[in-house]
Image 1 (cartoon, rainbow, N blue to C red):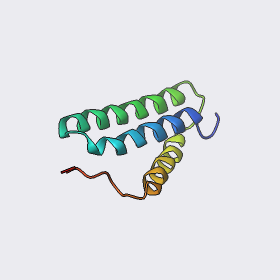
Image 2: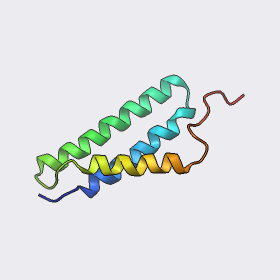
Image 3: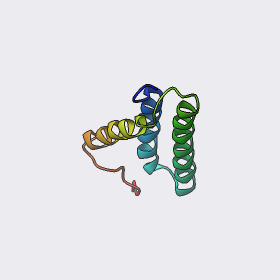
Image 4: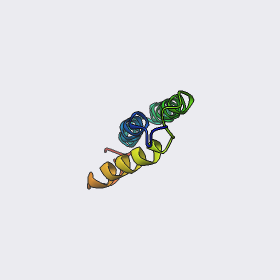
Length: 83
């Protein structure tokens, strides 16, 4: 088994950033985007483990990348009230 999964890392980094960017969406859309992102992250990681290709540590690495991108944004979380 490889360690960590590049697929899970990339999926987590991409969908983690998407969850961050969803903060500016209306509440219903935000929930849908975030729930879909979490589901896709878990499905990619699960597929890699089921195929015995990797351990799911890529999720942690991808989370670090998404968190660093949010911190480097420099503006904090997007404002929910744009008025």
